[in-house]
Picture 1 (cartoon, rainbow, N blue to C red):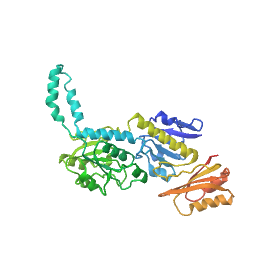
Picture 2: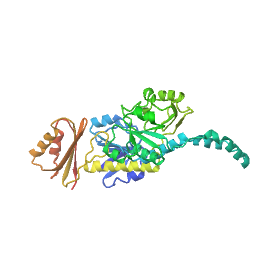
Picture 3: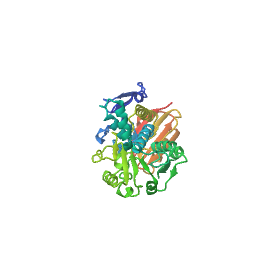
Picture 4: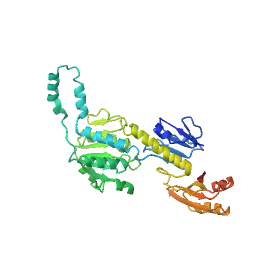
Length: 392
Protein backbone atom coordinates (compact mmCIF):
# COMPACT_ATOMS: atom_id res chain seq x y z
CA UNK A 1 0.00 0.00 0.00
CA UNK A 2 1.47 3.33 -1.09
CA UNK A 3 0.70 6.41 1.00
CA UNK A 4 0.02 9.76 -0.73
CA UNK A 5 -0.21 12.95 1.28
CA UNK A 6 -2.19 15.77 -0.31
CA UNK A 7 -1.93 19.51 0.25
CA UNK A 8 -4.44 22.13 -0.96
CA UNK A 9 -7.69 21.10 -2.60
CA UNK A 10 -6.89 18.56 -5.30
CA UNK A 11 -9.59 18.06 -7.94
CA UNK A 12 -11.57 14.88 -7.30
CA UNK A 13 -10.95 13.63 -10.84
CA UNK A 14 -7.25 13.49 -9.97
CA UNK A 15 -7.76 11.74 -6.63
CA UNK A 16 -9.93 9.14 -8.36
CA UNK A 17 -6.88 7.99 -10.32
CA UNK A 18 -5.51 6.37 -7.16
CA UNK A 19 -6.95 2.88 -6.71
CA UNK A 20 -7.96 2.45 -3.07
CA UNK A 21 -6.66 -1.11 -3.32
CA UNK A 22 -3.07 0.09 -3.68
CA UNK A 23 -3.06 3.71 -2.47
CA UNK A 24 -3.99 5.46 0.76
CA UNK A 25 -4.61 9.16 0.03
CA UNK A 26 -5.29 12.04 2.41
CA UNK A 27 -4.14 15.28 3.99
CA UNK A 28 -3.30 13.62 7.31
CA UNK A 29 -1.05 10.84 5.98
CA UNK A 30 2.09 10.33 8.06
CA UNK A 31 5.42 9.25 6.50
CA UNK A 32 4.10 9.32 2.92
CA UNK A 33 5.74 7.72 -0.08
CA UNK A 34 4.63 10.69 -2.23
CA UNK A 35 3.13 14.16 -1.90
CA UNK A 36 0.62 15.84 -4.21
CA UNK A 37 0.21 19.61 -3.96
CA UNK A 38 -0.66 22.81 -5.77
CA UNK A 39 0.44 26.07 -4.14
CA UNK A 40 1.45 24.79 -0.71
CA UNK A 41 4.96 25.98 0.21
CA UNK A 42 6.89 22.79 0.87
CA UNK A 43 9.98 23.06 3.09
CA UNK A 44 13.02 20.81 3.32
CA UNK A 45 11.89 19.83 6.83
CA UNK A 46 8.74 18.31 5.30
CA UNK A 47 10.80 15.70 3.42
CA UNK A 48 10.54 12.51 5.46
CA UNK A 49 12.87 9.50 4.94
CA UNK A 50 9.98 7.54 3.39
CA UNK A 51 9.34 10.13 0.69
CA UNK A 52 10.18 9.15 -2.89
CA UNK A 53 8.23 11.66 -5.00
CA UNK A 54 6.59 15.09 -4.97
CA UNK A 55 4.06 16.00 -7.66
CA UNK A 56 3.10 19.61 -8.28
CA UNK A 57 -0.28 19.98 -10.01
CA UNK A 58 0.95 22.86 -12.16
CA UNK A 59 3.95 23.87 -14.23
CA UNK A 60 5.95 25.95 -11.75
CA UNK A 61 7.81 24.32 -8.86
CA UNK A 62 9.07 27.41 -7.04
CA UNK A 63 7.12 26.24 -3.97
CA UNK A 64 9.05 22.96 -3.84
CA UNK A 65 12.63 22.67 -2.47
CA UNK A 66 13.88 20.94 -5.61
CA UNK A 67 17.58 20.95 -4.66
CA UNK A 68 16.85 19.38 -1.28
CA UNK A 69 14.68 16.75 -2.98
CA UNK A 70 17.41 15.89 -5.47
CA UNK A 71 19.96 15.56 -2.67
CA UNK A 72 17.70 12.99 -0.99
CA UNK A 73 16.86 11.11 -4.20
CA UNK A 74 13.28 12.39 -4.32
CA UNK A 75 11.73 12.80 -7.78
CA UNK A 76 9.87 16.09 -8.35
CA UNK A 77 7.12 16.05 -11.00
CA UNK A 78 5.21 18.91 -12.59
CA UNK A 79 2.42 19.00 -15.17
CA UNK A 80 3.62 21.01 -18.19
CA UNK A 81 0.88 21.81 -20.65
CA UNK A 82 -2.01 20.68 -18.46
CA UNK A 83 -3.14 24.27 -17.88
CA UNK A 84 -1.87 25.62 -21.22
CA UNK A 85 -5.28 26.26 -22.77
CA UNK A 86 -6.51 28.06 -19.66
CA UNK A 87 -3.53 30.42 -19.70
CA UNK A 88 -3.80 30.90 -23.47
CA UNK A 89 -7.40 32.05 -23.16
CA UNK A 90 -6.46 34.55 -20.45
CA UNK A 91 -3.65 35.90 -22.64
CA UNK A 92 -6.13 36.39 -25.49
CA UNK A 93 -8.40 38.30 -23.11
CA UNK A 94 -5.41 40.44 -22.10
CA UNK A 95 -4.61 41.18 -25.74
CA UNK A 96 -8.15 42.42 -26.29
CA UNK A 97 -8.27 44.40 -23.04
CA UNK A 98 -4.95 46.06 -23.89
CA UNK A 99 -6.24 47.13 -27.31
CA UNK A 100 -9.79 48.16 -26.47
CA UNK A 101 -10.65 49.95 -23.22
CA UNK A 102 -13.28 47.37 -22.41
CA UNK A 103 -12.74 47.69 -18.65
CA UNK A 104 -13.06 51.48 -18.76
CA UNK A 105 -16.16 51.22 -20.91
CA UNK A 106 -17.84 48.83 -18.50
CA UNK A 107 -16.95 51.04 -15.54
CA UNK A 108 -18.36 54.09 -17.35
CA UNK A 109 -21.68 52.41 -18.09
CA UNK A 110 -21.88 51.18 -14.49
CA UNK A 111 -21.51 54.78 -13.32
CA UNK A 112 -24.76 55.63 -15.15
CA UNK A 113 -26.88 53.27 -13.08
CA UNK A 114 -28.98 56.11 -11.60
CA UNK A 115 -30.15 57.38 -15.00
CA UNK A 116 -33.65 56.09 -15.67
CA UNK A 117 -34.44 57.97 -18.89
CA UNK A 118 -33.43 55.79 -21.86
CA UNK A 119 -32.98 58.76 -24.21
CA UNK A 120 -30.65 60.53 -21.79
CA UNK A 121 -28.71 57.29 -21.24
CA UNK A 122 -28.24 56.79 -24.99
CA UNK A 123 -27.16 60.44 -25.43
CA UNK A 124 -24.46 60.11 -22.74
CA UNK A 125 -23.22 56.80 -24.11
CA UNK A 126 -22.92 58.16 -27.64
CA UNK A 127 -21.22 61.33 -26.44
CA UNK A 128 -18.63 59.56 -24.31
CA UNK A 129 -17.83 56.38 -26.23
CA UNK A 130 -14.94 58.07 -28.06
CA UNK A 131 -13.07 58.02 -24.73
CA UNK A 132 -12.80 54.25 -25.10
CA UNK A 133 -11.66 54.15 -28.72
CA UNK A 134 -9.16 51.35 -29.37
CA UNK A 135 -7.41 49.52 -32.18
CA UNK A 136 -7.72 46.13 -33.85
CA UNK A 137 -5.29 43.29 -33.37
CA UNK A 138 -5.42 42.26 -37.02
CA UNK A 139 -2.23 43.31 -38.81
CA UNK A 140 -0.31 44.03 -35.59
CA UNK A 141 2.82 42.14 -34.57
CA UNK A 142 3.03 39.90 -31.50
CA UNK A 143 6.38 38.82 -30.07
CA UNK A 144 6.14 35.53 -28.17
CA UNK A 145 9.03 34.92 -25.77
CA UNK A 146 9.04 31.19 -24.98
CA UNK A 147 7.49 28.72 -27.42
CA UNK A 148 6.57 25.82 -25.16
CA UNK A 149 3.10 24.45 -24.47
CA UNK A 150 1.51 27.84 -23.72
CA UNK A 151 3.57 30.02 -26.05
CA UNK A 152 2.87 27.83 -29.06
CA UNK A 153 -0.89 27.92 -28.36
CA UNK A 154 -0.80 31.71 -28.03
CA UNK A 155 1.15 31.97 -31.27
CA UNK A 156 -1.38 29.85 -33.14
CA UNK A 157 -4.33 31.82 -31.75
CA UNK A 158 -2.68 35.13 -32.65
CA UNK A 159 -2.19 33.94 -36.23
CA UNK A 160 -5.89 33.08 -36.35
CA UNK A 161 -6.60 36.67 -35.28
CA UNK A 162 -4.62 37.92 -38.27
CA UNK A 163 -1.54 39.04 -36.34
CA UNK A 164 2.07 38.76 -37.46
CA UNK A 165 3.76 36.47 -34.94
CA UNK A 166 7.44 36.59 -34.03
CA UNK A 167 8.92 33.95 -31.75
CA UNK A 168 12.05 33.52 -29.67
CA UNK A 169 13.09 30.44 -27.71
CA UNK A 170 16.73 29.33 -27.75
CA UNK A 171 15.91 26.18 -25.77
CA UNK A 172 12.93 24.99 -27.79
CA UNK A 173 12.46 21.22 -27.72
CA UNK A 174 11.92 19.06 -30.80
CA UNK A 175 8.36 18.31 -29.61
CA UNK A 176 7.60 22.01 -29.18
CA UNK A 177 9.09 22.82 -32.59
CA UNK A 178 6.72 20.32 -34.21
CA UNK A 179 3.75 22.00 -32.48
CA UNK A 180 4.72 25.46 -33.69
CA UNK A 181 2.90 26.81 -36.77
CA UNK A 182 5.23 27.35 -39.70
CA UNK A 183 3.96 30.95 -40.07
CA UNK A 184 5.70 31.95 -36.81
CA UNK A 185 8.85 33.92 -37.65
CA UNK A 186 11.76 32.69 -35.53
CA UNK A 187 13.88 35.58 -34.23
CA UNK A 188 17.60 35.21 -33.56
CA UNK A 189 17.62 37.36 -30.43
CA UNK A 190 15.38 39.26 -28.05
CA UNK A 191 16.33 42.83 -29.04
CA UNK A 192 15.24 42.10 -32.62
CA UNK A 193 11.94 40.65 -31.41
CA UNK A 194 11.25 43.62 -29.10
CA UNK A 195 12.04 46.16 -31.81
CA UNK A 196 9.53 44.62 -34.24
CA UNK A 197 6.69 43.85 -31.83
CA UNK A 198 3.59 45.92 -31.12
CA UNK A 199 2.81 43.44 -28.36
CA UNK A 200 5.19 41.22 -26.34
CA UNK A 201 3.96 38.23 -24.33
CA UNK A 202 6.17 36.25 -21.94
CA UNK A 203 5.97 32.46 -21.60
CA UNK A 204 9.31 31.36 -20.15
CA UNK A 205 9.86 29.49 -16.86
CA UNK A 206 11.32 31.30 -13.89
CA UNK A 207 14.99 30.31 -13.83
CA UNK A 208 18.12 32.15 -12.71
CA UNK A 209 18.75 33.13 -16.34
CA UNK A 210 15.19 34.43 -16.88
CA UNK A 211 14.76 36.35 -13.62
CA UNK A 212 14.82 40.04 -14.53
CA UNK A 213 14.78 39.20 -18.25
CA UNK A 214 12.74 42.35 -18.82
CA UNK A 215 14.96 45.04 -17.31
CA UNK A 216 16.20 48.56 -18.00
CA UNK A 217 18.53 47.38 -20.76
CA UNK A 218 16.07 45.08 -22.56
CA UNK A 219 13.29 47.68 -22.34
CA UNK A 220 15.43 50.06 -24.41
CA UNK A 221 14.88 47.71 -27.36
CA UNK A 222 11.08 47.88 -27.11
CA UNK A 223 9.20 49.64 -29.87
CA UNK A 224 7.82 52.90 -28.49
CA UNK A 225 4.20 52.50 -27.40
CA UNK A 226 4.32 48.70 -27.32
CA UNK A 227 2.31 46.58 -24.90
CA UNK A 228 3.81 44.00 -22.53
CA UNK A 229 1.94 40.95 -21.24
CA UNK A 230 3.30 38.74 -18.45
CA UNK A 231 1.46 35.51 -17.70
CA UNK A 232 4.63 33.55 -16.90
CA UNK A 233 6.10 34.62 -13.52
CA UNK A 234 6.34 38.00 -11.82
CA UNK A 235 10.14 38.12 -11.21
CA UNK A 236 10.80 37.85 -14.95
CA UNK A 237 9.96 41.58 -15.11
CA UNK A 238 11.85 44.13 -13.02
CA UNK A 239 9.12 46.35 -11.58
CA UNK A 240 11.11 49.57 -11.23
CA UNK A 241 12.48 49.39 -14.75
CA UNK A 242 8.99 48.69 -16.07
CA UNK A 243 7.52 51.65 -14.17
CA UNK A 244 10.08 53.96 -15.77
CA UNK A 245 9.28 52.57 -19.24
CA UNK A 246 5.56 53.08 -18.59
CA UNK A 247 6.10 56.64 -17.42
CA UNK A 248 8.13 57.65 -20.48
CA UNK A 249 5.82 55.89 -22.95
CA UNK A 250 8.27 53.26 -24.12
CA UNK A 251 5.67 50.74 -22.90
CA UNK A 252 2.09 51.91 -23.42
CA UNK A 253 0.55 49.42 -21.02
CA UNK A 254 1.35 46.36 -18.96
CA UNK A 255 -1.07 43.52 -18.29
CA UNK A 256 0.00 40.72 -15.96
CA UNK A 257 -1.30 38.00 -13.67
CA UNK A 258 0.88 38.99 -10.72
CA UNK A 259 -0.03 42.05 -8.59
CA UNK A 260 3.01 43.76 -7.05
CA UNK A 261 3.24 46.84 -4.83
CA UNK A 262 4.00 49.99 -6.78
CA UNK A 263 2.18 48.87 -9.92
CA UNK A 264 -1.36 48.16 -8.75
CA UNK A 265 -2.37 51.85 -8.93
CA UNK A 266 -0.51 52.75 -12.13
CA UNK A 267 -2.97 54.05 -14.76
CA UNK A 268 -1.28 52.09 -17.57
CA UNK A 269 -1.31 48.78 -15.69
CA UNK A 270 -3.98 46.06 -15.53
CA UNK A 271 -3.31 43.21 -13.09
CA UNK A 272 -5.28 40.03 -12.40
CA UNK A 273 -4.98 37.94 -9.20
CA UNK A 274 -3.05 34.97 -10.62
CA UNK A 275 -5.96 33.60 -12.65
CA UNK A 276 -3.92 31.78 -15.30
CA UNK A 277 -4.86 28.24 -14.24
CA UNK A 278 -8.03 29.18 -12.37
CA UNK A 279 -10.51 27.19 -14.40
CA UNK A 280 -12.24 23.96 -13.46
CA UNK A 281 -10.78 22.30 -16.54
CA UNK A 282 -7.18 23.33 -15.82
CA UNK A 283 -7.32 22.23 -12.20
CA UNK A 284 -8.74 18.88 -13.23
CA UNK A 285 -6.19 18.40 -16.02
CA UNK A 286 -3.29 19.20 -13.68
CA UNK A 287 -4.59 16.91 -10.94
CA UNK A 288 -5.14 14.00 -13.32
CA UNK A 289 -1.73 14.41 -14.95
CA UNK A 290 0.08 14.66 -11.60
CA UNK A 291 -1.77 11.65 -10.20
CA UNK A 292 -1.08 9.50 -13.28
CA UNK A 293 2.63 10.31 -13.09
CA UNK A 294 2.74 9.32 -9.42
CA UNK A 295 0.84 6.09 -10.04
CA UNK A 296 3.23 5.10 -12.84
CA UNK A 297 6.31 5.99 -10.81
CA UNK A 298 5.21 4.24 -7.63
CA UNK A 299 3.85 1.18 -9.46
CA UNK A 300 6.56 0.45 -12.03
CA UNK A 301 9.24 3.12 -11.53
CA UNK A 302 8.81 5.06 -14.79
CA UNK A 303 9.47 8.81 -14.71
CA UNK A 304 7.62 11.34 -16.88
CA UNK A 305 7.80 15.13 -16.55
CA UNK A 306 10.30 15.40 -13.74
CA UNK A 307 12.14 18.67 -13.16
CA UNK A 308 15.13 17.07 -11.42
CA UNK A 309 15.39 13.47 -12.70
CA UNK A 310 15.84 12.12 -16.23
CA UNK A 311 12.84 10.88 -18.17
CA UNK A 312 12.96 7.08 -17.94
CA UNK A 313 10.41 4.64 -19.32
CA UNK A 314 10.79 0.86 -19.60
CA UNK A 315 7.96 -1.38 -20.72
CA UNK A 316 7.47 -4.07 -18.05
CA UNK A 317 8.90 -7.37 -19.23
CA UNK A 318 7.57 -9.58 -16.45
CA UNK A 319 9.16 -10.76 -13.25
CA UNK A 320 10.56 -8.16 -10.89
CA UNK A 321 12.02 -4.69 -11.24
CA UNK A 322 14.62 -2.74 -9.31
CA UNK A 323 14.64 1.05 -9.40
CA UNK A 324 17.99 2.40 -8.27
CA UNK A 325 18.82 6.08 -7.75
CA UNK A 326 22.47 7.02 -7.47
CA UNK A 327 24.75 9.99 -7.72
CA UNK A 328 26.01 10.43 -11.26
CA UNK A 329 29.57 9.19 -10.87
CA UNK A 330 31.56 6.76 -13.05
CA UNK A 331 31.40 3.01 -12.50
CA UNK A 332 28.03 2.81 -10.76
CA UNK A 333 26.26 0.59 -13.29
CA UNK A 334 29.11 -1.92 -13.42
CA UNK A 335 29.07 -2.22 -9.63
CA UNK A 336 25.32 -2.94 -9.64
CA UNK A 337 25.74 -5.53 -12.39
CA UNK A 338 28.52 -7.18 -10.41
CA UNK A 339 26.26 -7.53 -7.38
CA UNK A 340 23.62 -9.22 -9.55
CA UNK A 341 26.18 -11.42 -11.35
CA UNK A 342 27.70 -12.60 -8.07
CA UNK A 343 24.26 -13.91 -7.09
CA UNK A 344 23.63 -15.39 -10.57
CA UNK A 345 20.57 -13.22 -11.10
CA UNK A 346 19.53 -12.89 -14.74
CA UNK A 347 18.84 -9.39 -16.03
CA UNK A 348 15.90 -9.42 -18.48
CA UNK A 349 15.98 -5.76 -19.47
CA UNK A 350 17.30 -2.46 -18.16
CA UNK A 351 17.68 1.25 -18.78
CA UNK A 352 20.06 3.79 -17.28
CA UNK A 353 19.84 7.57 -17.66
CA UNK A 354 21.31 10.56 -15.90
CA UNK A 355 20.55 14.23 -15.40
CA UNK A 356 23.23 16.49 -14.00
CA UNK A 357 24.24 15.05 -10.61
CA UNK A 358 21.75 12.19 -10.41
CA UNK A 359 21.28 8.90 -12.30
CA UNK A 360 18.33 6.55 -12.36
CA UNK A 361 18.23 2.87 -13.32
CA UNK A 362 15.41 0.43 -14.00
CA UNK A 363 16.58 -3.19 -13.95
CA UNK A 364 14.17 -6.05 -14.69
CA UNK A 365 15.23 -9.36 -13.17
CA UNK A 366 13.80 -12.86 -13.37
CA UNK A 367 13.40 -13.54 -9.67
CA UNK A 368 12.37 -11.72 -6.55
CA UNK A 369 15.17 -9.80 -4.88
CA UNK A 370 16.11 -11.08 -1.45
CA UNK A 371 16.62 -8.46 1.28
CA UNK A 372 20.35 -9.26 1.18
CA UNK A 373 20.48 -8.23 -2.50
CA UNK A 374 18.77 -4.91 -1.80
CA UNK A 375 21.14 -4.32 1.10
CA UNK A 376 24.16 -5.10 -1.11
CA UNK A 377 23.08 -2.58 -3.75
CA UNK A 378 22.29 0.03 -1.09
CA UNK A 379 25.76 -0.51 0.34
CA UNK A 380 27.40 0.64 -2.91
CA UNK A 381 28.89 4.05 -2.34
CA UNK A 382 26.79 6.82 -4.01
CA UNK A 383 23.59 4.73 -4.20
CA UNK A 384 20.80 6.91 -2.81
CA UNK A 385 17.84 4.51 -2.70
CA UNK A 386 16.55 1.23 -4.10
CA UNK A 387 12.97 0.11 -4.68
CA UNK A 388 11.61 -3.24 -5.88
CA UNK A 389 8.41 -3.94 -7.85
CA UNK A 390 6.65 -7.09 -8.90
CA UNK A 391 5.60 -6.38 -12.48
CA UNK A 392 4.47 -9.75 -13.80
